[in-house]
Amino acid sequence: MPGNVKDIGSISDLINGLRMVETKSVYVGILGNVDSDFIKIAAANEFGAIIKPKKGKFLAIPLVPEAKGKSPKAFGDLKLIRKKGSKGEAGGVLARVAGTNIEPIFALVKQVIIPERSFLRETFEQTSVLDAIREEAQFAIEDYFAGKIEAIQILHRIGLRMVAEIRNRIVDNDPALAPNSPLTLKLKKGSGPLRDSLRLFQAISYSIDGEIYSVSGGIA
Image (cartoon, rainbow, N blue to C red):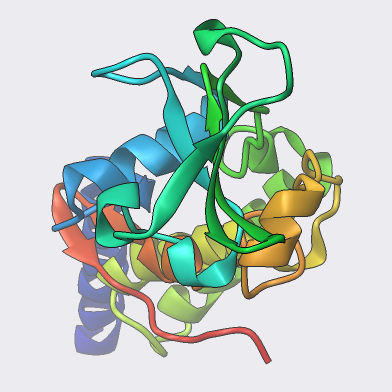
């Protein structure tokens, strides 16, 4: 008889653990201490964007790796070259000029269009992804009832699976994201969309009721 009472108590504890899980929320995305400029870059890729200059008429787009992340002001020897017969509204290039040798360093454009590359929303529109998350939750609950993990670990395993699915989307590029332009491919380190310094990849994390958990790991 005492054994039966103990079993009932254990079942009650397990049920209470599941009730605790039901009261909590798991979020995934670009979370934590991330600078505002990086958030803007992530949002521009997720939703698409048209970038226009805040000051002046043109954006300076780097054309060579050494100009990436720099302003034309960092180069003291650039000359403005415009297409013959064009007016000031047409932009042009800032180039190094040495005799007859012309090396374009920046292109001057009125705007840059970033196509939508939804690495968050579209990931969770995939039936296979939702099935994988449900399966992870099911296995975690089974492990919980088997006494292998605590109740809170159910949420952690769901969060980790969600992060993994987003990262897999970026790595596998399936379904395909909008491709990079030839110029972007020339300047960036990674070959696929959203894969340059892998900063975006590493910034994807999850939270449980506001407490953020970073997930280490890169691309093999």
